[in-house]
Length: 185
Length: 137
Image (cartoon, rainbow over all chains, first blue to last red):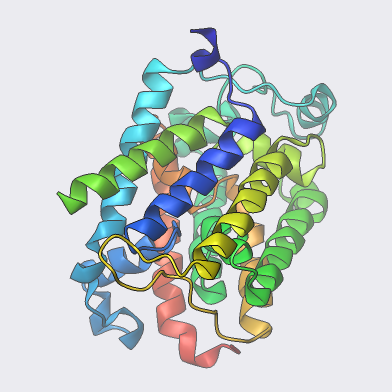
């Protein structure tokens, strides 16, 4: 039963993600984890502020159910199927420790320096989390999809727009990690 | 009954994201540092199977269970929105170390802090809705 607690290798996870996409296609839906953010905005009345949120959000309630499922899946995996630590490349772990004083690689699932509940009392950490979320939400809707919608669904359907978006994801990510991290952290 | 189906799909997806460590900040950082094949292997193997499967669906004209059309419509042609939106998304992905799917998974796994990221993502979506007509698409 050890394989349950061990991290699942890429050749197990990748095919299972493809399976998730096919199951959604078979039930007539599209795999994409960011459109639910628009549904959420519409559901809390954002239609008053912008036509972008004036649509029949009740027809999109299914994606809120997928979200609820993902929350439950995270709960099950963290509590019953994992020791909640992530081992990464030791060189990267050492570099994180030396350059940014992030020393929790191998000991936690997320860096406790940023994600521990106590860190929320630090306005700097709060700003990082909020800005990261803002960019993800804004960028996903501007680009018309996120990692699942473009990198998995769109590229599987050989969509050039999705390739452009994924190239954008990597430009943004590389700029952040290589040029902005040294300025921010 | 249909809602139960979506819930089960979500649970399945959530467990995969967490167990593959695709929901871990460390794995995202490592990916952008080209420190491991792991994340590239996940996305790459999902894609190989995805591309083949979508071709099989299209060539055999397979329909969803309810007989409607498969959600495989071509995306609108443009460069600006995909590139600019993509870059902004990528900046956030690397800063928060999480993309939308994993955010919910992490909320379930008990990280209170991720709720700030989710709040930011909803606010960012709202902001896009307000500014949409002023942006190049």
